[in-house]
Amino acid sequence: MNLLVVEDDERVRRFVRRGLQAEGHTVTLARDGPDGFERARHEDYDVVILDVMLPGIDGNQVCSRLRSERRAMPIMMLTALDQTDQKVSALRGGADDYLTKPFDFDELLARIEALGRRSKKLARQDSEIIQLGSLSIDKASMTVHYEGRDIELTAKEFGLLELFAESRGRVLSRTRILNKIWGYDSDPLTNIVDVYVRRLRGKMDWGPQTGWIRTVRSYGYKMQPMLD
Image 1: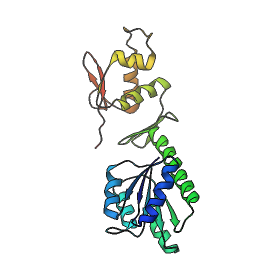
Image 2: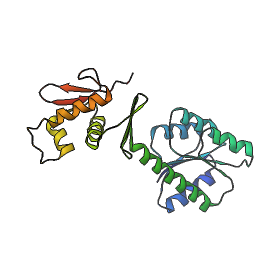
Image 3: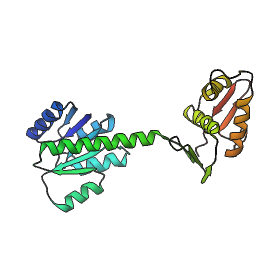
Image 4: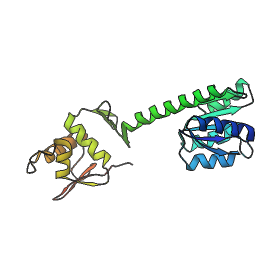
């Protein structure tokens, strides 16, 4: 995993980096709050290990600022303060886990690995849902929700909507749609694409030029989401 360790104690910083690198992880170090905050904002990390008592900006502030910017990476707080109110404050500020110094390295490693697994699971779940304004497409369950109602679609209609959503803003030719949804052995002269687009528009209450799927004359279609 790619890890960021924000710690002002050089001895602890070196100990943690050496141990994590020995386990095959990539480790970036930051010595104070502002440096850690900027690194976490502009680089992708699987887990951030963040000391509470930091120069410049303390760890709780770094954590809350990252969460206010919708940075979703897992954050583990490290601190020498073994007080319940400190732990509660860190967790309420957006931290995912909390470990008190001095800590056992094996426990630190296990917690980091657990946070990494949880993050990957959430990322997989997020990748299965396409959210465009009031339109939600769940690829895993093949369900569609639009403007407060569930839309019942056949498998082909769902595949067509999914293709449009994943290609939003781009023009798709009828041939490409036909090959993608019905297969390469489909008759290129068939009008099945137009038939299914009409059916999909009808179920979604989208007009030919006022809804999300626009006709590109003599070529194909383009999804232009209306995200007011």
